[in-house]
Image (cartoon, rainbow, N blue to C red; front, top):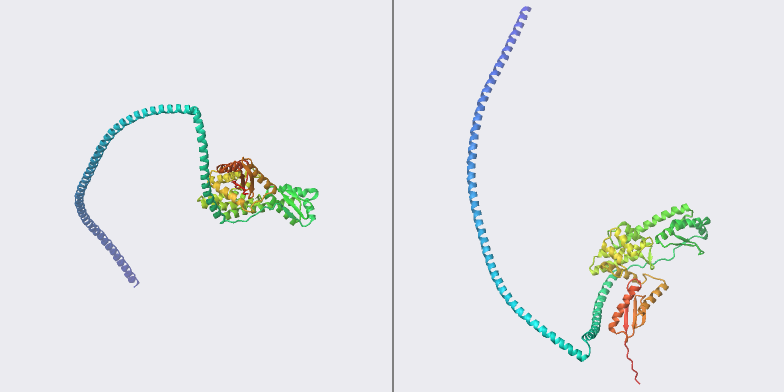
Amino acid sequence: MVRVWIARCIKKIIIRRVDMDLSILSVFLISLVSVALGIFFGLFINKYINKKNIEEAKEAANQYIRRSESRSKEILIEAKEEAHNITLKTEKKLNRIQLDLDRTESRLETRENSIKDLEVNLKNKNIELNKLLKKSEKNQEEIDISKKEIKQKLENITGLSAEEARVQLLEEVDSDITYEISKKYRDAELIAQSEIDQKSKMILAESLQRYASEVVQENTVSAIAIPNEEMKGRLIGREGRNIRAIENITGTDLLIDEAPETVSISCFDPVRRKVAIQTVEKLIQDGRIHPAKIEEIYERSKNEIEEIVRKSGQNAVFEVNVKGLHPEIIKLMGRLQFRYSYGENVLQHSKEVGMIAAMLASELKVDVQNAKTAGFLHDIGKALTHEFEGSHAIIGADVARKYGVSEEIVTAIKEHHDTQMSSVESFIVAAADAISAARPGARHDTLEAYIQRLEKLENVAKEFDGVQKVFAIQAGREVRVMVDPEDVDDVEASSLARNIVNRIEETLSYPGQIKVIVIRESRSEQIAS
Protein backbone atom coordinates (compact mmCIF):
# COMPACT_ATOMS: atom_id res chain seq x y z
CA MET A 1 0.00 0.00 0.00
CA VAL A 2 2.77 2.29 0.85
CA ARG A 3 4.41 1.75 -2.46
CA VAL A 4 1.19 2.44 -4.27
CA TRP A 5 0.70 5.66 -2.27
CA ILE A 6 4.27 6.73 -2.95
CA ALA A 7 3.87 5.97 -6.64
CA ARG A 8 0.68 8.03 -6.77
CA CYS A 9 2.40 10.91 -5.08
CA ILE A 10 5.30 10.77 -7.47
CA LYS A 11 2.88 10.68 -10.38
CA LYS A 12 0.99 13.69 -9.13
CA ILE A 13 4.21 15.59 -8.69
CA ILE A 14 5.34 14.75 -12.21
CA ILE A 15 1.94 15.77 -13.65
CA ARG A 16 2.01 19.12 -11.78
CA ARG A 17 5.53 19.80 -12.95
CA VAL A 18 4.60 19.09 -16.59
CA ASP A 19 1.49 21.32 -16.28
CA MET A 20 3.64 24.08 -14.85
CA ASP A 21 6.14 23.86 -17.67
CA LEU A 22 3.35 23.95 -20.22
CA SER A 23 1.78 27.01 -18.60
CA ILE A 24 5.11 28.85 -18.58
CA LEU A 25 5.69 28.02 -22.21
CA SER A 26 2.22 29.15 -23.15
CA VAL A 27 2.71 32.43 -21.32
CA PHE A 28 6.02 32.99 -23.09
CA LEU A 29 4.51 32.28 -26.49
CA ILE A 30 1.57 34.58 -25.81
CA SER A 31 3.94 37.35 -24.72
CA LEU A 32 6.09 36.91 -27.80
CA VAL A 33 3.06 37.07 -30.07
CA SER A 34 1.79 40.17 -28.24
CA VAL A 35 5.12 41.94 -28.67
CA ALA A 36 5.20 41.11 -32.35
CA LEU A 37 1.66 42.37 -32.82
CA GLY A 38 2.48 45.54 -30.84
CA ILE A 39 5.50 46.26 -33.00
CA PHE A 40 3.51 45.73 -36.15
CA PHE A 41 0.60 47.88 -35.10
CA GLY A 42 3.03 50.55 -33.75
CA LEU A 43 4.83 50.78 -37.04
CA PHE A 44 1.52 50.97 -38.88
CA ILE A 45 0.12 53.70 -36.62
CA ASN A 46 3.39 55.67 -36.76
CA LYS A 47 3.38 55.56 -40.54
CA TYR A 48 -0.23 56.76 -40.54
CA ILE A 49 0.52 59.63 -38.15
CA ASN A 50 3.61 60.72 -40.11
CA LYS A 51 1.61 60.77 -43.31
CA LYS A 52 -1.10 62.85 -41.67
CA ASN A 53 1.48 65.31 -40.20
CA ILE A 54 3.08 65.75 -43.60
CA GLU A 55 -0.27 66.54 -45.14
CA GLU A 56 -1.08 69.05 -42.37
CA ALA A 57 2.35 70.71 -42.77
CA LYS A 58 1.82 71.04 -46.51
CA GLU A 59 -1.58 72.60 -45.90
CA ALA A 60 -0.13 75.06 -43.31
CA ALA A 61 2.66 76.02 -45.70
CA ASN A 62 0.17 76.66 -48.47
CA GLN A 63 -1.94 78.82 -46.14
CA TYR A 64 1.16 80.83 -45.03
CA ILE A 65 2.12 81.36 -48.67
CA ARG A 66 -1.40 82.55 -49.49
CA ARG A 67 -1.39 84.95 -46.49
CA SER A 68 2.08 86.26 -47.42
CA GLU A 69 1.00 86.96 -50.96
CA SER A 70 -2.10 88.78 -49.68
CA ARG A 71 -0.03 90.85 -47.17
CA SER A 72 2.57 91.77 -49.79
CA LYS A 73 -0.20 93.07 -52.03
CA GLU A 74 -1.58 95.16 -49.14
CA ILE A 75 1.91 96.55 -48.32
CA LEU A 76 2.45 97.43 -51.95
CA ILE A 77 -0.87 99.29 -52.06
CA GLU A 78 -0.05 101.17 -48.80
CA ALA A 79 3.42 102.09 -50.11
CA LYS A 80 1.91 103.48 -53.29
CA GLU A 81 -0.58 105.56 -51.25
CA GLU A 82 2.20 106.84 -48.93
CA ALA A 83 4.36 107.77 -51.90
CA HIS A 84 1.42 109.61 -53.42
CA ASN A 85 0.81 111.53 -50.16
CA ILE A 86 4.50 112.44 -49.85
CA THR A 87 4.47 113.68 -53.42
CA LEU A 88 1.45 115.89 -52.70
CA LYS A 89 3.03 117.32 -49.51
CA THR A 90 6.31 118.01 -51.30
CA GLU A 91 4.52 119.79 -54.10
CA LYS A 92 2.60 121.96 -51.59
CA LYS A 93 5.83 122.79 -49.72
CA LEU A 94 7.60 123.69 -52.95
CA ASN A 95 4.70 125.89 -53.96
CA ARG A 96 4.81 127.65 -50.56
CA ILE A 97 8.58 128.18 -50.82
CA GLN A 98 8.17 129.55 -54.31
CA LEU A 99 5.50 131.94 -53.05
CA ASP A 100 7.80 133.15 -50.24
CA LEU A 101 10.61 133.65 -52.71
CA ASP A 102 8.34 135.70 -54.93
CA ARG A 103 7.30 137.89 -52.01
CA THR A 104 10.91 138.34 -50.85
CA GLU A 105 11.96 139.29 -54.33
CA SER A 106 9.15 141.83 -54.46
CA ARG A 107 10.22 143.36 -51.11
CA LEU A 108 13.83 143.53 -52.25
CA GLU A 109 12.80 145.36 -55.39
CA THR A 110 10.78 147.83 -53.32
CA ARG A 111 13.69 148.36 -50.91
CA GLU A 112 16.10 148.84 -53.78
CA ASN A 113 13.85 151.52 -55.20
CA SER A 114 13.68 153.21 -51.76
CA ILE A 115 17.48 153.15 -51.48
CA LYS A 116 17.79 154.78 -54.86
CA ASP A 117 15.38 157.51 -53.75
CA LEU A 118 17.39 158.02 -50.54
CA GLU A 119 20.62 158.30 -52.50
CA VAL A 120 19.06 161.01 -54.63
CA ASN A 121 17.82 162.86 -51.51
CA LEU A 122 21.24 162.48 -49.85
CA LYS A 123 22.98 164.02 -52.84
CA ASN A 124 20.56 166.93 -52.72
CA LYS A 125 21.16 167.36 -48.95
CA ASN A 126 24.93 167.32 -49.47
CA ILE A 127 24.62 170.04 -52.05
CA GLU A 128 22.50 172.15 -49.65
CA LEU A 129 24.93 171.45 -46.76
CA ASN A 130 27.91 172.60 -48.79
CA LYS A 131 26.06 175.81 -49.58
CA LEU A 132 25.28 176.33 -45.84
CA LEU A 133 28.91 175.64 -44.86
CA LYS A 134 30.18 178.20 -47.29
CA LYS A 135 27.63 180.68 -45.99
CA SER A 136 28.59 179.87 -42.37
CA GLU A 137 32.28 180.40 -43.08
CA LYS A 138 31.47 183.73 -44.61
CA ASN A 139 29.35 184.70 -41.57
CA GLN A 140 32.14 183.60 -39.20
CA GLU A 141 34.60 185.82 -40.98
CA GLU A 142 32.20 188.73 -40.63
CA ILE A 143 31.71 187.93 -36.89
CA ASP A 144 35.48 187.81 -36.28
CA ILE A 145 35.86 191.19 -37.94
CA SER A 146 32.99 192.59 -35.83
CA LYS A 147 34.50 191.16 -32.60
CA LYS A 148 37.83 192.77 -33.31
CA GLU A 149 36.14 196.10 -33.96
CA ILE A 150 34.04 195.84 -30.72
CA LYS A 151 37.09 194.79 -28.71
CA GLN A 152 39.05 197.76 -29.98
CA LYS A 153 36.18 200.15 -29.17
CA LEU A 154 35.85 198.68 -25.58
CA GLU A 155 39.57 199.08 -24.94
CA ASN A 156 39.38 202.68 -26.10
CA ILE A 157 36.34 203.37 -23.85
CA THR A 158 37.37 201.56 -20.60
CA GLY A 159 41.08 201.99 -20.77
CA LEU A 160 41.50 198.23 -19.93
CA SER A 161 43.09 195.56 -22.04
CA ALA A 162 41.03 192.55 -23.07
CA GLU A 163 42.80 190.28 -20.55
CA GLU A 164 42.25 192.72 -17.67
CA ALA A 165 38.56 193.08 -18.55
CA ARG A 166 38.18 189.29 -18.72
CA VAL A 167 39.77 188.81 -15.29
CA GLN A 168 37.55 191.49 -13.73
CA LEU A 169 34.43 189.98 -15.27
CA LEU A 170 35.35 186.47 -14.08
CA GLU A 171 35.87 187.70 -10.53
CA GLU A 172 32.45 189.33 -10.45
CA VAL A 173 30.77 186.28 -11.97
CA ASP A 174 32.62 183.93 -9.59
CA SER A 175 31.44 185.91 -6.57
CA ASP A 176 27.84 185.92 -7.79
CA ILE A 177 27.91 182.21 -8.65
CA THR A 178 29.46 181.28 -5.27
CA TYR A 179 26.74 183.16 -3.44
CA GLU A 180 24.00 181.60 -5.56
CA ILE A 181 25.45 178.10 -5.11
CA SER A 182 25.65 178.56 -1.32
CA LYS A 183 22.06 179.77 -1.29
CA LYS A 184 20.83 176.87 -3.42
CA TYR A 185 22.85 174.39 -1.35
CA ARG A 186 21.40 175.82 1.87
CA ASP A 187 17.83 175.58 0.57
CA ALA A 188 18.33 172.01 -0.68
CA GLU A 189 20.05 171.07 2.57
CA LEU A 190 17.16 172.44 4.63
CA ILE A 191 14.60 170.53 2.57
CA ALA A 192 16.62 167.29 2.63
CA GLN A 193 17.39 167.64 6.34
CA SER A 194 13.72 168.17 7.12
CA GLU A 195 12.73 165.04 5.20
CA ILE A 196 15.59 163.00 6.67
CA ASP A 197 14.82 164.13 10.23
CA GLN A 198 11.15 163.31 9.83
CA LYS A 199 11.83 159.86 8.34
CA SER A 200 14.62 158.98 10.79
CA LYS A 201 12.57 160.09 13.79
CA MET A 202 9.69 157.95 12.63
CA ILE A 203 11.95 154.91 12.14
CA LEU A 204 13.72 155.39 15.48
CA ALA A 205 10.47 155.95 17.33
CA GLU A 206 8.97 152.85 15.73
CA SER A 207 12.03 150.77 16.69
CA LEU A 208 12.49 152.13 20.21
CA GLN A 209 8.88 151.70 21.26
CA ARG A 210 9.15 148.03 20.25
CA TYR A 211 12.10 147.33 22.54
CA ALA A 212 12.81 148.19 26.16
CA SER A 213 15.71 146.61 28.05
CA GLU A 214 17.12 146.59 31.52
CA VAL A 215 20.00 148.80 32.61
CA VAL A 216 22.86 146.83 34.16
CA GLN A 217 25.70 148.85 35.65
CA GLU A 218 29.11 147.78 36.83
CA ASN A 219 29.85 147.20 40.48
CA THR A 220 33.18 148.98 40.69
CA VAL A 221 34.26 147.37 43.98
CA SER A 222 34.81 143.60 44.07
CA ALA A 223 34.63 143.15 47.82
CA ILE A 224 34.33 139.85 49.70
CA ALA A 225 32.88 139.63 53.18
CA ILE A 226 34.77 137.52 55.73
CA PRO A 227 33.34 136.19 59.01
CA ASN A 228 36.02 137.62 61.31
CA GLU A 229 39.45 139.23 61.44
CA GLU A 230 41.09 135.85 62.08
CA MET A 231 40.17 134.83 58.53
CA LYS A 232 42.33 137.68 57.19
CA GLY A 233 45.35 136.14 58.87
CA ARG A 234 44.53 132.72 57.47
CA LEU A 235 44.19 134.19 53.98
CA ILE A 236 47.59 135.85 54.36
CA GLY A 237 49.17 132.65 55.75
CA ARG A 238 52.51 132.12 57.36
CA GLU A 239 54.95 134.66 55.98
CA GLY A 240 52.35 135.56 53.34
CA ARG A 241 52.51 132.23 51.50
CA ASN A 242 48.71 131.90 51.12
CA ILE A 243 48.15 135.38 49.69
CA ARG A 244 51.09 134.89 47.29
CA ALA A 245 49.64 131.54 46.19
CA ILE A 246 46.20 133.10 45.63
CA GLU A 247 47.67 135.96 43.57
CA ASN A 248 49.98 133.70 41.53
CA ILE A 249 47.34 131.05 40.80
CA THR A 250 44.44 133.40 40.01
CA GLY A 251 46.47 136.18 38.35
CA THR A 252 44.78 138.87 40.47
CA ASP A 253 45.66 141.18 43.36
CA LEU A 254 44.20 140.31 46.77
CA LEU A 255 43.86 143.58 48.69
CA ILE A 256 43.73 143.20 52.46
CA ASP A 257 43.53 146.52 54.27
CA GLU A 258 42.15 147.74 57.56
CA ALA A 259 38.54 147.70 56.40
CA PRO A 260 36.69 145.49 58.90
CA GLU A 261 35.68 142.00 57.77
CA THR A 262 36.32 142.75 54.09
CA VAL A 263 38.93 141.84 51.47
CA SER A 264 39.00 143.04 47.84
CA ILE A 265 39.98 141.48 44.52
CA SER A 266 41.58 143.67 41.83
CA CYS A 267 42.14 142.62 38.20
CA PHE A 268 41.62 144.23 34.78
CA ASP A 269 40.29 140.91 33.39
CA PRO A 270 36.70 140.56 34.67
CA VAL A 271 36.63 136.79 34.09
CA ARG A 272 39.80 136.21 36.09
CA ARG A 273 38.46 138.53 38.78
CA LYS A 274 35.22 136.52 38.96
CA VAL A 275 37.14 133.23 39.23
CA ALA A 276 39.32 134.70 41.99
CA ILE A 277 36.27 135.97 43.91
CA GLN A 278 34.62 132.55 43.79
CA THR A 279 37.88 130.84 44.79
CA VAL A 280 38.34 133.07 47.85
CA GLU A 281 34.69 132.68 48.88
CA LYS A 282 34.96 128.88 48.73
CA LEU A 283 38.24 128.94 50.67
CA ILE A 284 36.54 130.99 53.38
CA GLN A 285 33.64 128.52 53.51
CA ASP A 286 35.96 125.50 53.59
CA GLY A 287 38.30 126.94 56.20
CA ARG A 288 41.30 124.89 55.04
CA ILE A 289 43.60 127.41 53.36
CA HIS A 290 46.96 126.26 52.00
CA PRO A 291 48.57 126.33 48.53
CA ALA A 292 47.43 122.85 47.49
CA LYS A 293 43.84 123.53 48.55
CA ILE A 294 43.93 126.94 46.86
CA GLU A 295 44.95 125.35 43.54
CA GLU A 296 42.28 122.64 43.85
CA ILE A 297 39.47 125.11 44.56
CA TYR A 298 40.74 127.46 41.83
CA GLU A 299 40.48 124.73 39.19
CA ARG A 300 36.98 123.88 40.37
CA SER A 301 35.92 127.54 40.35
CA LYS A 302 37.49 128.07 36.93
CA ASN A 303 35.46 125.20 35.46
CA GLU A 304 32.28 126.55 37.07
CA ILE A 305 32.88 130.06 35.69
CA GLU A 306 33.61 128.64 32.23
CA GLU A 307 30.29 126.80 32.40
CA ILE A 308 28.58 130.04 33.47
CA VAL A 309 30.27 131.82 30.54
CA ARG A 310 29.09 129.15 28.11
CA LYS A 311 25.51 129.23 29.42
CA SER A 312 25.48 133.04 29.40
CA GLY A 313 26.51 133.02 25.74
CA GLN A 314 23.91 130.38 24.85
CA ASN A 315 21.16 132.24 26.69
CA ALA A 316 22.09 135.50 24.96
CA VAL A 317 22.09 133.81 21.53
CA PHE A 318 18.71 132.22 22.28
CA GLU A 319 17.28 135.50 23.56
CA VAL A 320 18.36 137.50 20.50
CA ASN A 321 17.56 134.54 18.18
CA VAL A 322 20.84 134.57 16.26
CA LYS A 323 21.55 131.35 14.35
CA GLY A 324 24.59 129.57 12.95
CA LEU A 325 27.28 130.90 15.33
CA HIS A 326 30.44 128.92 16.07
CA PRO A 327 30.70 127.59 19.67
CA GLU A 328 33.85 129.67 20.25
CA ILE A 329 31.99 132.85 19.32
CA ILE A 330 29.19 131.91 21.74
CA LYS A 331 31.80 131.37 24.46
CA LEU A 332 33.42 134.76 23.78
CA MET A 333 30.01 136.44 23.95
CA GLY A 334 29.46 134.77 27.32
CA ARG A 335 32.69 136.36 28.61
CA LEU A 336 31.13 139.77 28.00
CA GLN A 337 28.76 138.97 30.90
CA PHE A 338 31.64 140.03 33.18
CA ARG A 339 32.83 142.97 31.04
CA TYR A 340 31.66 146.57 31.55
CA SER A 341 32.16 149.68 29.40
CA TYR A 342 31.35 153.10 30.84
CA GLY A 343 29.61 151.25 33.65
CA GLU A 344 27.34 149.35 31.22
CA ASN A 345 27.30 145.56 30.99
CA VAL A 346 28.70 144.74 27.53
CA LEU A 347 26.68 141.54 27.00
CA GLN A 348 23.43 143.33 27.85
CA HIS A 349 24.51 146.17 25.55
CA SER A 350 25.27 143.69 22.73
CA LYS A 351 21.85 142.05 23.05
CA GLU A 352 20.20 145.45 22.99
CA VAL A 353 22.15 146.60 19.92
CA GLY A 354 21.24 143.36 18.12
CA MET A 355 17.52 143.84 18.79
CA ILE A 356 17.55 147.54 17.84
CA ALA A 357 19.55 146.79 14.66
CA ALA A 358 16.99 144.14 13.67
CA MET A 359 14.14 146.61 14.14
CA LEU A 360 15.92 149.32 12.15
CA ALA A 361 16.66 146.81 9.37
CA SER A 362 13.01 145.73 9.22
CA GLU A 363 11.94 149.38 8.90
CA LEU A 364 14.55 150.02 6.17
CA LYS A 365 13.75 146.77 4.28
CA VAL A 366 17.29 145.39 4.83
CA ASP A 367 18.32 141.80 5.68
CA VAL A 368 17.13 141.56 9.31
CA GLN A 369 19.19 138.48 10.24
CA ASN A 370 22.48 140.00 9.04
CA ALA A 371 21.79 143.30 10.83
CA LYS A 372 20.80 141.51 14.05
CA THR A 373 23.90 139.26 13.99
CA ALA A 374 26.21 142.21 13.27
CA GLY A 375 24.65 144.25 16.09
CA PHE A 376 24.90 141.33 18.50
CA LEU A 377 28.58 140.66 17.66
CA HIS A 378 29.74 144.28 17.22
CA ASP A 379 31.57 144.38 20.60
CA ILE A 380 32.87 140.78 20.63
CA GLY A 381 36.41 142.17 20.37
CA LYS A 382 36.07 143.57 23.91
CA ALA A 383 36.31 140.00 25.21
CA LEU A 384 39.90 139.89 23.88
CA THR A 385 41.17 143.50 24.00
CA HIS A 386 43.48 142.67 26.92
CA GLU A 387 44.98 139.73 24.96
CA PHE A 388 45.56 141.31 21.53
CA GLU A 389 46.70 144.72 20.30
CA GLY A 390 44.31 146.91 18.36
CA SER A 391 40.84 148.35 18.67
CA HIS A 392 38.00 146.10 19.72
CA ALA A 393 36.31 146.64 16.32
CA ILE A 394 39.35 145.29 14.39
CA ILE A 395 39.83 142.40 16.84
CA GLY A 396 36.14 141.53 16.68
CA ALA A 397 36.14 141.55 12.87
CA ASP A 398 39.18 139.23 12.78
CA VAL A 399 37.57 136.81 15.25
CA ALA A 400 34.28 136.78 13.33
CA ARG A 401 36.07 136.14 10.03
CA LYS A 402 38.13 133.34 11.63
CA TYR A 403 35.00 131.45 12.72
CA GLY A 404 33.13 131.67 9.42
CA VAL A 405 30.89 134.71 9.83
CA SER A 406 29.79 136.22 6.49
CA GLU A 407 31.82 139.11 5.08
CA GLU A 408 28.86 141.55 5.28
CA ILE A 409 28.66 141.03 9.05
CA VAL A 410 32.46 141.21 9.44
CA THR A 411 32.49 144.56 7.61
CA ALA A 412 29.73 145.95 9.84
CA ILE A 413 31.63 144.88 12.98
CA LYS A 414 34.83 146.47 11.67
CA GLU A 415 33.23 149.78 10.63
CA HIS A 416 30.74 150.45 13.43
CA HIS A 417 33.01 153.17 14.91
CA ASP A 418 34.39 154.50 11.59
CA THR A 419 33.41 157.79 9.98
CA GLN A 420 33.43 156.22 6.50
CA MET A 421 31.18 153.16 6.06
CA SER A 422 30.80 150.91 3.03
CA SER A 423 27.55 149.05 3.72
CA VAL A 424 24.06 149.74 4.99
CA GLU A 425 24.58 147.16 7.77
CA SER A 426 27.48 149.27 9.09
CA PHE A 427 25.25 152.35 9.32
CA ILE A 428 22.50 150.34 11.05
CA VAL A 429 24.89 148.85 13.64
CA ALA A 430 26.47 152.26 14.32
CA ALA A 431 23.02 153.81 14.78
CA ALA A 432 21.84 150.99 17.06
CA ASP A 433 25.06 151.27 19.10
CA ALA A 434 24.56 155.03 19.51
CA ILE A 435 20.89 154.58 20.47
CA SER A 436 21.77 152.00 23.11
CA ALA A 437 24.59 154.12 24.53
CA ALA A 438 22.44 157.27 24.61
CA ARG A 439 19.65 155.79 26.74
CA PRO A 440 19.31 157.57 30.11
CA GLY A 441 21.28 155.70 32.73
CA ALA A 442 22.90 153.31 30.27
CA ARG A 443 26.41 154.69 30.75
CA HIS A 444 28.16 156.94 33.20
CA ASP A 445 31.60 158.52 33.36
CA THR A 446 33.69 160.32 35.92
CA LEU A 447 32.85 163.99 36.55
CA GLU A 448 36.33 165.15 35.55
CA ALA A 449 36.27 163.30 32.20
CA TYR A 450 32.75 164.58 31.58
CA ILE A 451 33.75 168.22 32.15
CA GLN A 452 36.90 167.88 30.02
CA ARG A 453 34.89 166.47 27.12
CA LEU A 454 32.42 169.36 27.22
CA GLU A 455 35.22 171.94 27.39
CA LYS A 456 36.92 170.40 24.33
CA LEU A 457 33.65 170.57 22.41
CA GLU A 458 33.17 174.25 23.24
CA ASN A 459 36.80 175.12 22.41
CA VAL A 460 36.54 173.53 18.94
CA ALA A 461 33.60 175.78 18.03
CA LYS A 462 35.25 178.91 19.51
CA GLU A 463 38.17 178.62 17.06
CA PHE A 464 36.04 179.90 14.14
CA ASP A 465 35.66 183.58 13.22
CA GLY A 466 32.37 185.26 14.03
CA VAL A 467 31.57 182.97 16.99
CA GLN A 468 30.50 184.85 20.13
CA LYS A 469 29.37 182.13 22.56
CA VAL A 470 29.31 178.34 22.63
CA PHE A 471 27.22 176.10 24.90
CA ALA A 472 27.60 172.30 25.10
CA ILE A 473 24.32 170.82 26.39
CA GLN A 474 22.47 167.48 26.52
CA ALA A 475 25.51 165.74 28.07
CA GLY A 476 27.69 166.88 25.18
CA ARG A 477 25.38 165.55 22.48
CA GLU A 478 24.35 169.04 21.31
CA VAL A 479 26.46 172.18 20.75
CA ARG A 480 24.78 175.58 20.33
CA VAL A 481 26.91 178.26 18.69
CA MET A 482 25.93 181.95 18.94
CA VAL A 483 27.40 184.03 16.07
CA ASP A 484 27.75 187.75 15.33
CA PRO A 485 25.03 188.67 12.78
CA GLU A 486 27.31 191.35 11.28
CA ASP A 487 30.05 188.81 10.45
CA VAL A 488 27.96 185.76 9.55
CA ASP A 489 24.84 185.87 7.35
CA ASP A 490 22.19 183.14 6.96
CA VAL A 491 23.97 181.44 4.06
CA GLU A 492 27.35 181.41 5.80
CA ALA A 493 25.74 180.02 8.99
CA SER A 494 25.03 176.74 7.21
CA SER A 495 28.65 176.50 6.02
CA LEU A 496 29.89 177.34 9.54
CA ALA A 497 27.84 174.51 11.08
CA ARG A 498 29.23 172.10 8.51
CA ASN A 499 32.82 173.24 9.17
CA ILE A 500 32.39 172.84 12.95
CA VAL A 501 31.04 169.30 12.44
CA ASN A 502 34.05 168.42 10.26
CA ARG A 503 36.48 169.84 12.86
CA ILE A 504 34.81 167.84 15.67
CA GLU A 505 35.02 164.63 13.61
CA GLU A 506 38.72 165.26 12.88
CA THR A 507 39.88 166.24 16.38
CA LEU A 508 37.61 164.52 18.91
CA SER A 509 36.52 160.95 19.63
CA TYR A 510 33.03 160.49 21.06
CA PRO A 511 30.29 157.86 21.30
CA GLY A 512 27.14 158.39 19.26
CA GLN A 513 26.42 161.67 17.46
CA ILE A 514 26.84 165.38 18.28
CA LYS A 515 24.34 167.89 16.92
CA VAL A 516 25.70 171.38 16.05
CA ILE A 517 23.24 174.31 15.94
CA VAL A 518 24.38 177.75 14.72
CA ILE A 519 22.14 180.57 15.99
CA ARG A 520 22.22 183.99 14.29
CA GLU A 521 20.08 186.66 15.93
CA SER A 522 19.56 190.20 14.57
CA ARG A 523 18.13 192.94 16.82
CA SER A 524 17.03 196.46 16.04
CA GLU A 525 16.61 198.85 19.01
CA GLN A 526 15.17 202.37 19.07
CA ILE A 527 14.45 204.64 22.05
CA ALA A 528 11.36 206.80 22.19
CA SER A 529 11.67 209.97 24.25
